[in-house]
Image (cartoon, rainbow, N blue to C red; front, side, top):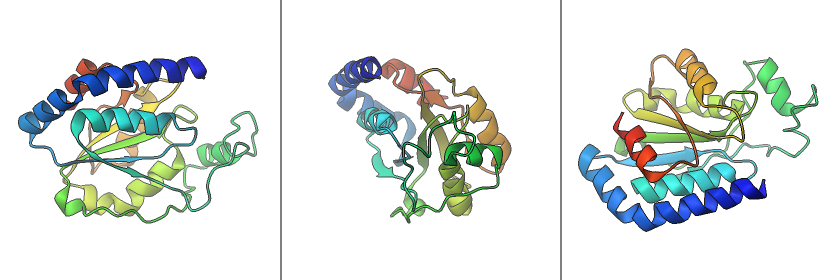
Amino acid sequence: MNAFKHIFAMTMAIAISCGSTVQAQAKNNHNMNPVIVYFTHSGNTELAAKQLAEITGAKMIRLLPEQPYSADDVDWTNRQSRCTQEHLDQSLRPAIKPIDIDFAKVDTLFVGFPIWWHEEPAVIRTFLDKYGEQLKDKIIFPFCTSYESPMSEADAALKKGYPALKIRKGLRLPAESEEIKKWIKQ
């Protein structure tokens, strides 16, 4: 975990050094009015959201469950843990605290999360269910953090679960600034 954070910190330093130029290019090339909504448990997804904010100029908004996840809740080796139960029963939707976003002023939404069970956590599904009608005309870029799991399974689950939304191919962070810029241009 320390190695991951060290690599992430180095990537952040590179992104920050190039941030203002990349941010200006992103705004000029796409006329984006972006917002980043992210859920983090260990802090890694928050670091990824900060890297993305440096590059895009997007406002960051942390998605908070009404009942925070404890270490026991995210113990994937325990069949009775909260994250395992939410994976096994895809209908479960943990309550989230309200967020302060005027979606009418947003055209691009970055949605970040850690990968749990090769997919987005149920709290992300709660967010998309709750705000889905307001998101129909927005471009949505999912991003994830994970030590091993690729973004591909979460991409497939999000596109299948929310076909009315304009969900682009996701990206696992941290990543180099050039890779992030290329991802945004897709």
